[in-house]
Length: 265
Image (cartoon, rainbow, N blue to C red; front, side, top):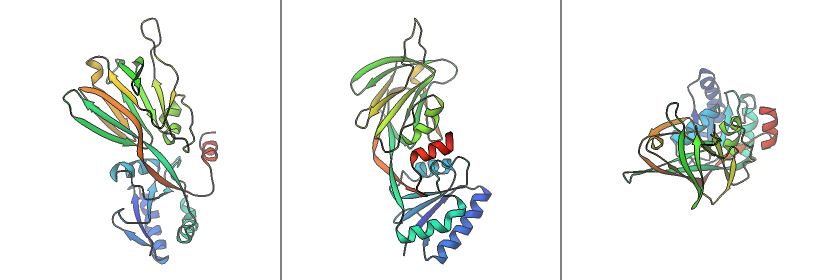
């Protein structure tokens, strides 16, 4: 017997669809589990934000995830509610395509020697607090690149290239590519400060290392996939692609560029 776990938001429309979904699964002989362990599939019902919450709350499960869209854009959540029956048939027949997605990792080191790590599907945003610009030393691996001055730095995965990165003028990146994109936020570029004004791409094995230039810049906001953390006394932040990947079910035969065309153009 196939077994699934359902993750959902608490929006009334979502709860109504989940109730119908559970009935359809029962009729099809598919068990609904209480936890995402030892299941064949995770069903995420909601919008793209619900999928991001699933990632953070369940530590980026590698079990295939199928998104049923009850939100707005639905870039990750590909299955419309009216096609649930078709989806269940494909699931039973084993006729689903799964695409791996890279996730990013941030290792934060503090002046007192402590460390903390986070992962994100879309992006990490590193920014200062208040209205003052921040000054950050930026290196790629062991090579110093620049002293950045501006609002902050955004480091996105290919999946996240369509989110905040795109709003900043960054490039759209096919999720089949293994890379990170680094985009500046309101960089200062004048006779006093010189910063890169366009995004750069890092290959899979490279790391971006950020170090505050002064005490004021050592208090930073770390934003990732809807999470917002503020830390003081930061010594360095190393950002790279995680070795872990998630697996999203692709439905309906659409490609990444089909979705870009339908969602953004």
